[in-house]
Length: 102
Image 1: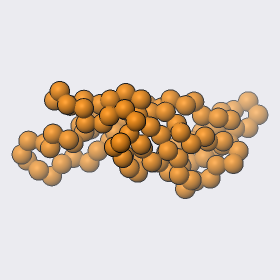
Image 2: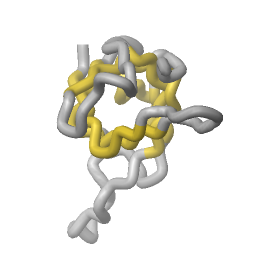
Image 3: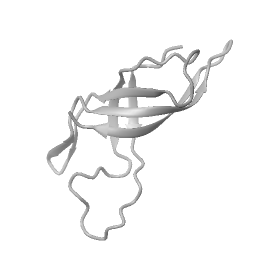
Image 4: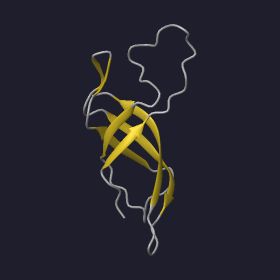
């Protein structure tokens, strides 16, 4: 089974230890990124630990500045892979490791 090519990522960032105003390039907790899967995933062959790549399809702006431009690359690892069985759905869980700006 192939995974849909568009994913919506909600970032869960650790709270900042600073009490001053946040860095203008730090995304807020719960920020959303629209991503397209670059690496095809087939749950029949995928294994936990496999690396997949995604790219951003829409820019993320903060304080009138684009902080994550279109075409940024996101690297992720598969953490759970459950192949589909008869009359069931496949399941994937990803851990997002890095965001690389173009």
